[in-house]
Image (cartoon, rainbow, N blue to C red; front, top):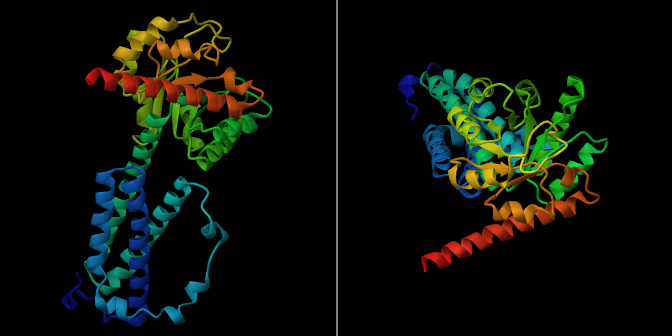
Length: 360
């Protein structure tokens, strides 16, 4: 890629070593990201962009730079940090490697200006492409996780809030909504941040109820809006394309409005009367049946659903459900979570078998 005619100064050994090290670093980081795009997300587009970036970096990694490498004399090989020695989740691994690539590209951009007059501009554009890739990957990963989530825990205020949520996460939960109508904003923000860290440790998503500002401040995965909250389209302007937006609906008209506004999923209910919504008349199973045939986006039946009436809701057509008291007030949240998930999977398998037999 480089040409001696484009040189601004004669190449120095130290400069070549810096460029070589950061080309290695950025290529390695991209390969780690690419593997998750390919095997974790099954995204040919995202994996393809990683591969394209790696190939462009390889073109700059010429023999002159490689030959300057002196690993035995490099003091950096002995440097490490405790955070580099372990990764608590896929999300943390991806974040660490995006930072690694972006930092390396910035080094290449600055030092490259000395080595080759075209190098700085090339790596500047590449760095912006990596920023875009990071945003696209995070948005894709969040939405794929949403699609895979069949059980949605909506929290209620509890002294042992973190303990109950973690117990549910240990039971296989992958989607949590932090809902608290009574605490002050300082407490809400602290809880949202702690729940976000906890959920990400288990590779689960955290959604914040009602408050777009708290969702942004806590770096949550999205927000859930009621009919009296900010319109979905306005929330999207604030949140950007990378975060999930859900919306509560009680009838077909509200469903269509949420879909038209760009919601990623909707809540369908309340199916049964519930103290969580004491002023809200139950939408009933009829709305569940309606959503089963009409909703073009993922939806969760919600409102008074517990282990005793779950089958009734599933038989009405629900494939995803949200629970509040059934888990938050359970003596053994892990077991209750596992029961919900097992029943949802059982119903999914039954429907798949019926569809298969219907075609044969």
